[in-house]
Length: 425
Image (cartoon, rainbow, N blue to C red; front, side):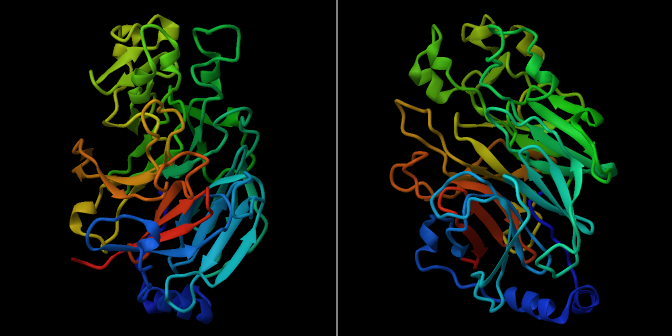
């Protein structure tokens, strides 16, 4: 979950929040002023957008408190806009126009995710999960951070650690693979030893201080890198959208065109004991089957062991790089969005000879506990006229729901925080 949505009355706010913060919170719920150009975004009819803050640094995932304050995890990556020191950024709007006029920063490390749970604010860095004690309405923690998990593997690629919470005090952590298809060891190892510590989802105790990776449990495996990770309030399930592998075009009988469309980015329901197939398998969107990778004897047709691996609920285009996932639980947006999934795509670098793509937010509706299989572009324009990792002005990462049902989107390229609201047709 990327947000905390709490229905509170004025009395409840006064009981737990300083008077000034309460006044600010109530005022900030009022009438945010959308930008004339929707902050450069293209949105469905009835929606508009504004900029909450700009050039704050490499903004990764974010969450919104019940009083409307926005909490952003900042990476240490060097990006335009400065502010690359990591830690947590807090944004507050005191006059109700939607733009933050107060900022606070605290903490350190190269941050990726930030979430509220109970009286704590949880924060993930590349190698650890911490929690800060929190008072309602505050912009700074009420004490020192506890380290929930430390020593998580953070070498080489896919170091960021997305988190989600589940029933029974479960803390789920994505630990991405350090490679494309288990390379970097001796040849192409089979079985892949990287699966022992990476390329999966680990379950820890959200209330236990001082854990290491060995104290947790590998909940699901074969997920190359699941930066887009969230629990769905409507069914209690854990879901993710996985970064697929690269470099299929360097193997016979494949070419660059095949690589540009393969493999699909997989949207999965993650259950205890699942094996999604990495590094041995990839999902072909045309045949709708898991196929054996060429490094392991595949030829674009063979399934082999992949016939037993878990298939996705649905598939998105190759190399779009899914980084954010939110299941909408608010009442501001039209009812068709309730329970559906918003997926944020960071954008591709390797779809040549096709144009680079992604750099957008899409919406996948659900019917009951399952997606319909259809999806649509919800917010576009982040990447500019010719999207590319270095040429795009903005690259979206995280998405959160505010207490009034607005959507917030972060950007780690230009350091912008967007707010999207529904005004009606």
